[in-house]
Image 1: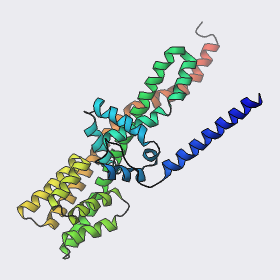
Image 2: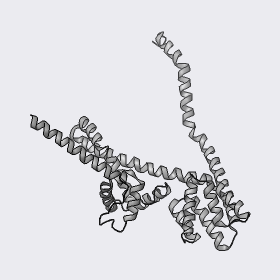
Image 3: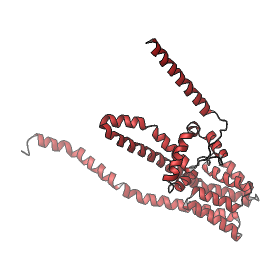
Image 4: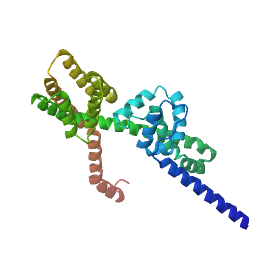
Length: 302
């Protein structure tokens, strides 16, 4: 009996030691050597380890999911990559790795799912548990899509004000680069500043203005923003003053915002029709209900 207790205590102590070592090693910020598959991608993976705690702690597991995703979901990876860029996530993510992260998070709930469904339905509960795993991954995937959409909406709401600022600065004699830098500083902390800051950084590193804006257009992948960027690039090719182009595009954005508001107001009446009918029915039942019950209880209908 004493030997069993000693062995159990030793096993627990060894497990705790291994767990402590693994936690400290996972949370360490130093760069680690990568496997053969990522041997040409060491800097990106090391930067991603610094940016994301989950990837740093569970990198081998996420990379296993990434290998599977690369073969099974190759058609969906370009869409996920666009959503990662539009959501403003670190650019070090590969789409298969980020999908693997979502799958890993969903797998953490698998023991709970299996325990609940097997307890209720027996062996058939395994199928329900797998379905719950897939649904959790799907909800996390939709969360990424919503995050990308919300960020693009925030950018489009503030874009006219940035274009107005660039117009005023350039009409006052500032160069495009200096006006862009001032605009980024004024909108610091907003997704709009992040995107135009990347455009400015690309130009400072040697990219042409066209390539820098094309990269932004590809990252956001929004029709309205793409149209504005195309107009700016077309105006530059034709020799039109950029200040004038910015002013026209800011007016176009405001007109489109007004049109969207009018469309939403027109659709609001149709959307409110069903709730209005239900409220009216509820009101009628509340008013007439006591009288109907009183008549029924008095035996008038018998």
